[in-house]
Image (cartoon, rainbow, N blue to C red; front, side, top):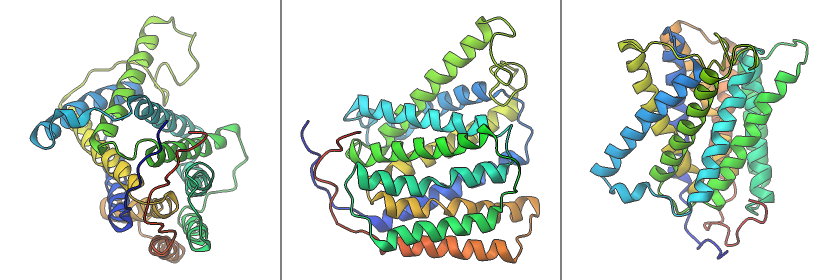
Length: 321
């Protein structure tokens, strides 16, 4: 396979993109928290992805053209989309068994995996500044979330698995999908959700009750039950689809245009925005430790901009991915 041509990084724009993604995703979560969503998870995943495909088609037709939606390396882009779907499902599967704080704390180990994979697979040089930024950001997350000392269960490994999968997907973005239009990567993600949602809902409808595990049937977190869709649900689905388009395009752009260590540290900003939206929409007032944690998260993001700036993408392809 021919090496990916060298290309100049744009770390400032990449950081702006990932911070915008964090703001959009956290806003979506804050709005959903205040609404009554009556759809099963797999039904929501499938319908949201179908709306997402329509949105991407409109954007492409009004902008770069439908041809921009076709990835340069379809197999790598498809693998990236499948890994991201697995990431979301691993995280969703953990939520019924863990507090949100414990799940989020496990998931936000992801910058460590991003740093490790950037060094191992993309062969990017990690500076002390980048490593310190990740450590400081994680300390800030712990101060904000302060997960309880509940007994350990195997479900606690699922958010960490989600973090590993996300880091792998972002490594693929950096090393194998760097020249793809972010719209095309968003399209392959939507298609992966459509395939996963269709298979899950189909299995839930065809297989007899009691054959699938609890939580897949009935009202569980991974429910495949198909429920009626009203105007409120359609509005929610459209909102979620727009959020996912923004997030998928912005995330692809960010990891295409800066080293993983730089972007990964700024992924922590999600926690800060979650606190802001919690105050704005739900009256959740942060305490002193939360404010200190937010300051550390912001400081880690700023410090990461002074991390490794080689100016070029890795000139050799990854040996593993």
